Length: 283
Image: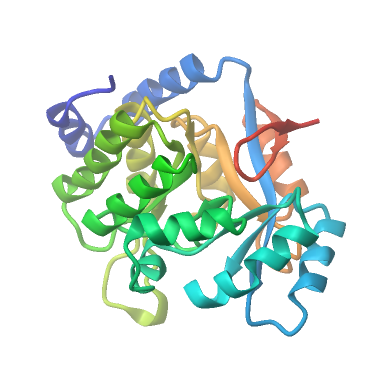
């Protein structure tokens, strides 16, 4: 099962970026020999919007197979049942572990309530740092049969050992529940001039590769284009990633679906759209 903690720390300390990438690529090829790279189509919808049903209908009309519901626990819970009834086939995702913890409910009770009224998956558009609360909420989700993505942020001043500690928590929970469909390492972006160095492309690719090698019991690894750009994304497909996350159907800046498909093809893979929850590939 993956490499050891010591081997992972050696990878973080190594200057052999290409060698680490080749090891990660070998794991990807073992798990995904078909040469396909997947992506989803979604839209973030504010649950406080006046006509949320019309917004979701517009997303569906534009090709979205899922929506990410934003606005906090109470806002999401208040509209979820109606949204599920109107859109029975739409993948409904929402709420970070921080928002669920802020609800004041025990994690199993909060997840069960959301699950009962129609939520398919927890997780907001922002990556988080794994901690005890994060683990307990993902565990509660997995125990209801809800599969999740470990979308984790790194590069905010932590050491390599601290970064790996987050991966260790993910690996232990996966061994316990098997509930993670994917892991998505996302580099910290210093918005507002925060005095932290931006994560370099080399550091991002190394972390992506270590995630793929160390977390080989999780089927999918998502490469992130939002903070590192399309060129680094393309390289990430040779550093263990087999998925490029989700494209917003209303995208007015950044990458479009066709741009991502071109990047995937230029890296030597076949681009295939998937449903947002990794349930199926769409031809």
